Image (cartoon, rainbow, N blue to C red; front, side):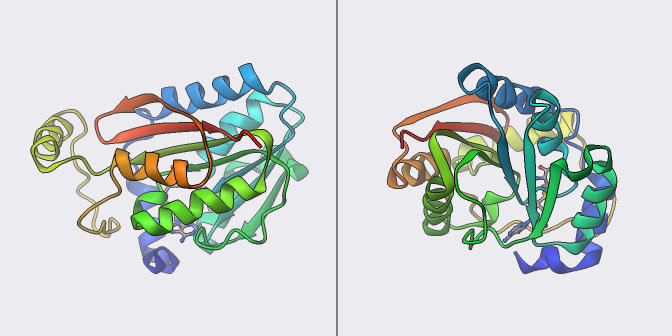
Length: 217
Ligand SMILES: C[S@@+](CC[C@H](N)C(=O)[O-])C[C@H]1O[C@@H](n2cnc3c(N)ncnc32)[C@H](O)[C@@H]1O
């Protein structure tokens, strides 16, 4: 995780993110799903928000909502402040580690995160989901769009497909992943441990899955 505090890691990631187009659909599915169930959404928090692309989709769909941007990286905070400048005081910015969400506001309509939780091990992931649940209003939504670790056979197959469809970047400095990313089962177990009973995976593309869970309260 701490590698993201290195300005070079954050800067080179911002320069080489190749999934921007690929993630347009799942971000919209996530936001539209919430809109169908919770049309008066007012307060959303994006954890590990980076430049804020996912948060932006919810701010556009809910014009009276306030967004809480969080991340560990000051470089990402600068990028997000530029990207989200047009929302003015509809966005507040907090440098926050996702392993400790104590400083998040309560009664959130949505806790969302994207491409960040794969740095957690299964126990940390379950804790993250539990802390997120503690900050959600009854009926609020947890949205997690992240890369998962498939079993070795499928890992090989998916890697081959991805290499052809989304060629790897030639930029140096891309961040490192540990050997085993949490699996789909780890996510579902973590969500169950956190008390989410209403869970679905409404989108998957290769390694990347959207988990959506409604907090029963
Ligand atoms: C791959 S980027 C994804 C950014 C954005 N969520 C997206 O999908 O476009 C991962 C982000 O997670 C942040 N991050 C990594 N570890 C974190 C932690 N422990 N707490 C909060 N943010 C973290 C990084 O600084 C970075 O902005």
